[in-house]
Length: 476
Image 1 (cartoon, rainbow, N blue to C red):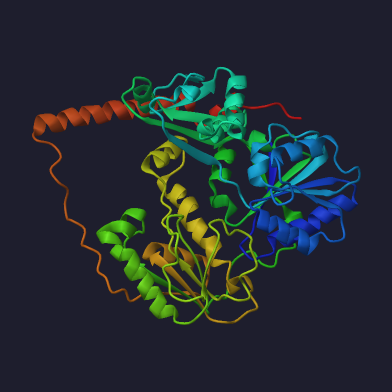
Image 2 (image 1 turned 180 degrees about the vertical axis):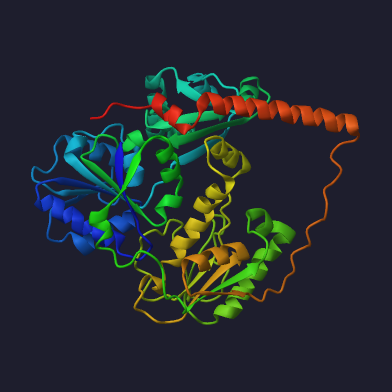
């Protein structure tokens, strides 16, 4: 399978290039599907580029009933002439099929997330899911799961429309029934759940490249594309990624240079996390916000933070919150020069462990979940416009993130933010772990058995590509 890609820096004109290439294809007699991450970005793109060409938009803004049903109906009887169809990734991801996909050229604007984690407290009701699961042979920690009856799982996925109690399982069931997702469980934790010794049902899923198989062509465009988990995992599974030269040659620039006007301020040397944020009754967070408020003064700033920050921590109307998925939005760049990051986006240790089991590193996971999100937030301000020469200030919680951003925005500087709070010193050394030498030796043997099991698992599975091979669907 071949996929074209554009590794385009934020603000380089990626969406502009996609739109103009889409118009060219329509004028050449082809249908074009543009998939974007949000309804707001879809509306913005259509209004800006497609006023003189037939463009259908199907989102919850244009359809008051089922968006999925509306898209499926439309694909059965589409507009008869070459045109553009725009939908959100969340809708595309949920389509059970795409009629006549070979007649459509696809542009995916922004790189979708390739993994998911579903967790339920379900000591009594887990059987709605687990009765339909069969674990594959395994020797490592994680086992692939297969669905015994996809019809039953489909019914559970559709239950959200008529049964509120079952609706909590709908998203997991939808991915479990689909051939476009490979699904896994921690087999020991899963066995404990089945035995009534645990309350936790946790399912990990990976999106297969088959979700984009069979179209006339596929192009994915996104900033720092080769760092994304999609690129890493799909390359491993055999996808051949090819530079989209027809898009690349129209970009405004390919890297961020000349950013001497940008100063990146950081609060703490220690890496930021929810645990650190909320420690000492939330003092690190409060002190960081106070320091930002003093340094920023009356300047207008946009900020981004976790969902559990439901009220702005800043005083004044000159602070504007960004959506948690701000990719591609242009409507802040004229009015805001400064950006504040409050987000703590480290994934759970069990999710990191799962992703490590399919060949990714902890650093790669953290790069995608935390740093890429901050990078996108930073580029919502006037930094998007390389011709604008106003001073810009970006405030981030930790030094590592500041230095990473500095490595991207060439010419920028990094400064320590004066914070009226001192993080407690890390305790030196570790607490005594074993009572005696016998206990230490016993633990060593257990670790050795675990390592041997993981090695056997790696030898059996080799990589994510083996799992993908077991879940492939034929080309259209």
